[in-house]
Image 1 (cartoon, rainbow, N blue to C red):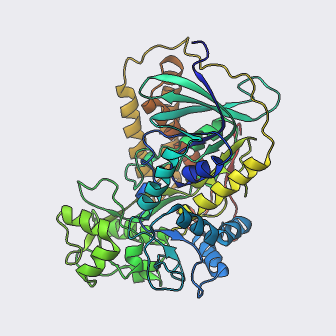
Image 2: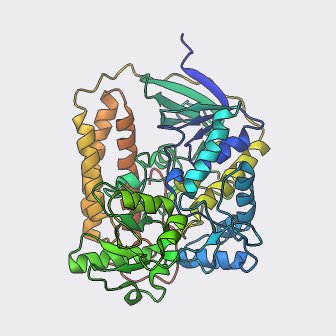
Image 3: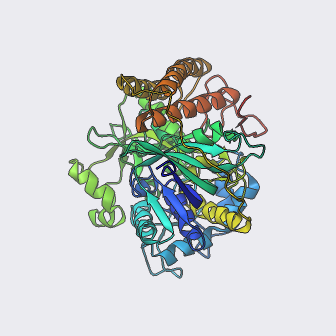
Length: 529
């Protein structure tokens, strides 16, 4: 009874998207793995990804071209070594997914798979499964994860915090696993492991409008920060230009590939506006397109703009974009005859936990992979479809590093202490604070920023932090409290990073500093400073 709270594994993988599942499957050949996910294995941002995965797969394309496109989108801030590392490992990553059975769309090309083109890319290099690539990848890997004898799947479990040497009073700093809340049974488990991988995704839910699932609450970023890890470039939040604008379409993304196949952005009167903002028009990188839409909406007082693909045949649209076609039809929009109403929405967190080319963080034994990490690949703006590629490449890198290390012996791990807390009396405090946070982040820390807006946001964040710290110290924790605590901390890191950048670059646009400086520098935040 006394020790039923404690479970030990060789490795913990926190997060069940592509990064987490790819890491778990690769580790499980020789290690006992626990995979922790807040909801079910399928509830991830990966499952929502539509467009595809970028990689050099065509003979007419090149590694250098993909690197250059990534650099251009990243506005001078991409790390050269990280970018080359990911791009050069791109083909191997795709081939691994193919061997896992991912049903990418085939054609008669020499490679055998259809490649599309998206904004910011100079070549067709996006391999995809129709317009639901993420779902196809997720379903394929989930089946393998569920059936693997060396993987223990813990669904409806949310990580409270990492277990570190400092918390245990040890002289040597290292991550030794995590405290995890079993949501259904309302008890906290101590999960010990010599290696822990954070694959928790981004923090889109810090904003009122987002394309992200409800699980995107910045958990890994917040936990790593509390454990003493640096975070970087948190000011660069990518707003996807085209989220479906409809009262019954929650967070439904209209893929970048639709513009890649000729979609045109128009005002309500039919006027095309993107050529006035950038010579690449609809194929400009996402930050430029999102700002252009934001500008036109504010200039004309619009609720949305429109993406027009009516010049394409119904057969083409139904075959290339079956999910979008069907979803819009269900909502009364025939995209072969009517333009699609769209608005920008928070989509991707380009910054995150500082991680090296082996996905190692500042804390030994702790790795960060995917959207939770700042690997240096995305710079100031992520190039379309580089995210899923990053997940597979760095999952492999993390696993190789873990397998190469002789695992140290686990120290004695204590149970979570709930002796000084009581049941919460006012749950409404959590929902009210959540709503307030997302609204002021949208208003003050959105696509266009000012010093005054950032100051207002930080003032409100500090008030929320005090309330949440008091609540956390006195009441038993819940899933909602954990997520709110992580979201507020992540919002703090976003605003603090934005305040430090005295220029406009990539996804960070400031009216007070509209010019881009000559030298690109990362914004690196260190705990305790």
